[in-house]
Length: 72
Image (cartoon, rainbow, N blue to C red; front, side):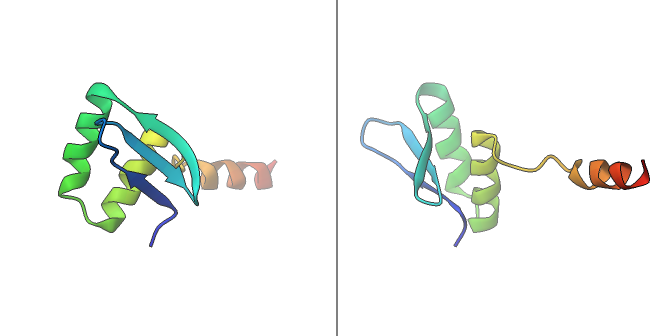
């Protein structure tokens, strides 16, 4: 089980939480797009999708920055 979870209230919105804390509520087009994408996704893909939607994901440059700081 991942750190992210989502709920689909009856009003059509999507509530995403991270480790039990509410992070973002999607509504309208963003909620509809999220529902479509998560419908066919496995657990790992759903976790990545929620991380991207909330902005809570590593962008891949952390290692590069750490290596540069060690050289200086």
